[in-house]
Length: 326
Image 1 (cartoon, rainbow, N blue to C red):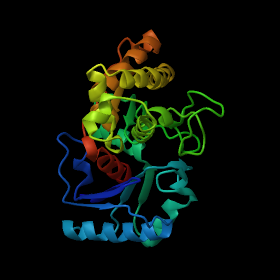
Image 2: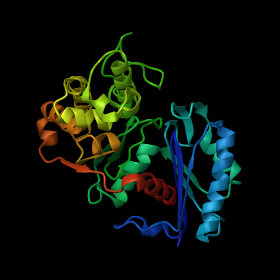
Image 3: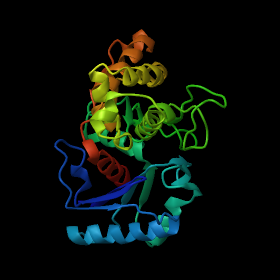
Image 4: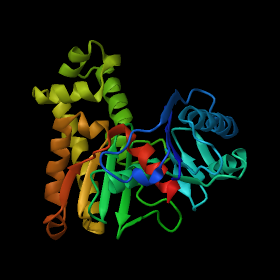
């Protein structure tokens, strides 16, 4: 048996899990990990400091699981755009990193005795869904996850498609408009679809517009402008609220067309959808998929299966662990 550690490193939380037998992971139901850890990333985000914390957490989760750390592979799914195959972070808006040799730093800190695999967080999630979730049984899937931001992963002909330079499937940063009036994105550019319908951006926009004089049932549902969330917007839209429906009429087609274009280009067997913005905002999702149905290439859509992600919050842990084990 080969033990393995999976890590999900986001902009808010660090999650780790240790399994004593990596070969058992690619199955349903996925076995529970022997030990887990969860911490907030916090304000100290310097790469060296965060790598030190990760090393301590890795040793701690292995110790709790009763696993000898010698040679245990470590997989990390990180909320970042990567460059190359060695785990270099080109840009992580959520961590505030640019051009950080994260993989090399972690390998060095762990003493060079363990295999370390660094992947984009949504690549890891998609890989987990393919090997042990909603993607099992087919070798061509597109996974799209909409939460705080928007990410995607591609399995093509049974391989995780990372691209020539390690930054494939950055669907959230597909441009839907250009120019000085386009909405700014945390990546540093304007007009990304994420800047219009990513959860954090949509929430920030709604709060600003309601504070500026717009009226919506969402504000009354939330109790105050500052408490409005995408869930309140969706509940307001369900009740026929003009503000929420007008906002959806603007932003939902943008994501729907981006999804349709991706399916048209890739021709996957399955489109797997996940993330809080799609699972907890059913009215918004219906608007997105209505636009998708209009825009997608009919031959690509004819036998396409559209499925919900199956592994929930653990997909990134499972996927990163499987990537490291393989």
